[in-house]
Image (cartoon, rainbow, N blue to C red; front, side, top):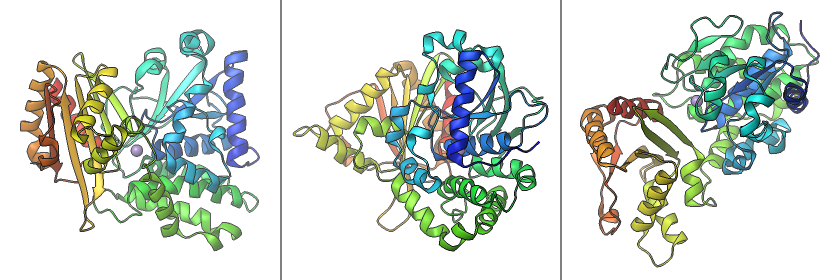
Length: 412
Ligand SMILES: [Mn+2]
């Protein structure tokens, strides 16, 4: 049965009370969670899926409301300027989003939100990591994702989807999965709400596919989803007259790369993922600025010190704090000629991990098109960690989605 349609903000308020009543009155709750890097795609895919599933719950649903849970603490929303740019378009503020800070304290999680009272739907990843994973892994009841299959979600997910497919954006897969059910609850009165959530979802598909222009990222799923979402926008008299897709894309992507005001340490942790393989820990930061920017940043933060020393020390500290054996930094930027480019830095913290890193460099070099970086700027460093190397990654189609599995393979 379809429920009265509501704005995104009202939906998030309802979802927050559903989460509260799960912890206070032990009611059943379904949580929809994106990955730990909590990028725009994780935000919009979890909110879109939760919103549409809650607007028309399946008769056999585990709970009426699906609660979108952002996989970071509340304070870390501030590290994501693209969120702050997008939220006002949906009449939202960052305090409306539901984050890990809204869960009971970690020490009480198991008792305050007992696993058997929960279902977890994973979007934009397919293996629940960290402390949530250790408590709720058995309660994962569905997935929509575009990363490599980890075979952690049961093959039969009943009422909930089990979709792991290639696409530029996970939000595209969610849009396409939900479209039929969405169409069935679309009315003239709800056109405004449809347009609002459609524009919200569109943001990450456009960012992930460079406004559908990136030949290596766009798939038919993305094109289909954008068509659906643009139709929802066009059906609303108000938004349809003011909406300009390219202008909207430019606004959000400009905000995403506007990280000049962030501290180096925050830049490293802003879009960060971690894996454990064979007892060794791997961490990868994705960064939307080139290493030259990071060197400049590092130099500013520690005046009168060689920037290369500062950068290496900062990354070393970052890796040590997280008990990493291997730490990788992947940068994306635009060259002076206007071409998209990638750099890859890998740091090993033990001899064992250095062995793995060399193996990776040998095995993955062809696939990734690794080419030695001009190390002039890094040459004068007195910092001497076990093993650090920087490359240009000339095969630019490969993001962390591809590099992480290659590194993990070398660790096995
Ligand atoms: Mn994604």
